[in-house]
Amino acid sequence: MKAELLYEGKAKKVYRSSTDSEKLVLSYKNDATAFNGKKKESFPGKGRLNNLISSLIFPYLHERGIKSHFMKRLNETEQLVMETTIIPMEVVVRNLATGSITKRLGLREKTPFSPPLVELFYKNDDLDDPLINDDHALLLTDVIHKELREIKAQALEINTVLTEFFQSINLKLVDFKLEFGRLPNGDIVLSDEISPDTCRLWDLKTNEKMDKDVFRQGTGDLITVYEQILQRLERRV
Ligand code: TMP
Image (cartoon, rainbow, N blue to C red):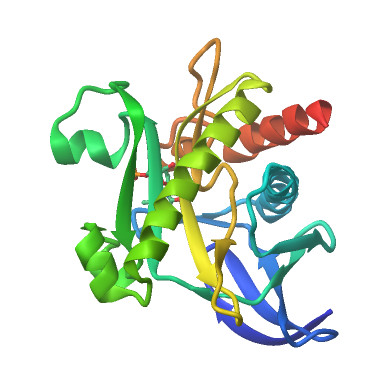
């Protein structure tokens, strides 16, 4: 299914599909990085878990009217997606204060955001992905004003859908990061992955962290918590 390797990121490899040149194969790696790659470790089985988890979430979003690059899961570690040009902007939605925003703005841990907060970061490893505003996003990317408005509205819609989704498996969606990409026809769609690498998920009852923070903070076993997320998702379906 795979032809040439187009790109290798910190958590995935991207290949052109050998059967359809307009499609890509995303191959999930076992590597976990944090703090812009300064902390790095490989966890056997992580690629499979994120591929399976993301491959359950994207079809669910699709059923709820959220268009994305996702086409289908191919096997344990790979999925087929439509080719997009990734917009170099990370869109973060926050329901509760934790992580970088508490340090940046001095907010108390767990301060609720109502309405949820949307933040933009410039996807640039050399600059450590700095926080940017709308004007910066228009300057640094090819999105136009109307598209940026739509991206932010869609991020909030995804938050509504996913908050309820995760609640049904006893998880609180604290915050998450999205990436968007441009299809060859110019349309912008949700791209990349949605997984415990890109979301903060806390157990609804115990507040236990069940996401990449266990690796970032060295407080637990990444594979154990990702396995639990997958099991809860599979039981739900
Ligand atoms: P932050 O609090 O570190 O800014 O993270 C906000 C959310 O974005 C959190 O759910 C983790 C996710 N995230 C990524 O997916 N990739 C990243 O590179 C960073 C910094 C955060």
